[in-house]
Image 1: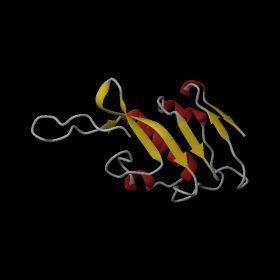
Image 2: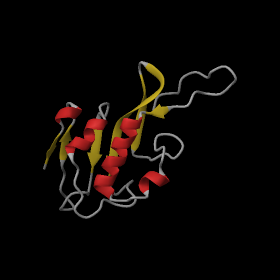
Image 3: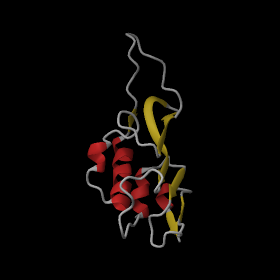
Length: 130
C-alpha cells in the first residue's frame, strides 16, 4: 500500500477508509468462498485496524483518505479457515470491487490441483474459467 496522505494540523493523520460498497463486496467474496460467518466480526476493517495479509489496498489517486481494494488472494497459505466444501464464486460479487487488479484463488474449487482463472478486464463483465 502506498504511504498515507500527509498529516493534518494537530498531528493526527486522516483516517483511511475503504468505501462501504467495496468492503461489502470483500465480505461477500469471503462469504461465498469461506462460509465463515465470523470473518467480518474478526476483520471489520481488513485494510487497516484488523489487517488481513491477503488484501492489498491503495490510495485513490483523486481522494487522499480513500482506499481502493486492488489485490485479493485466497489460498491455504493465508486463508483460515480454508475454503468451504462446495465453494463457489459468483462473478456478480466482483462487481463491487471495480479497482481490483489481481484476484488469486488456490485450492478452493473441486480437485486440489484445479486452477481457475478469473478475468478481471472489467468488473461488470467478470468471467470464471476452469
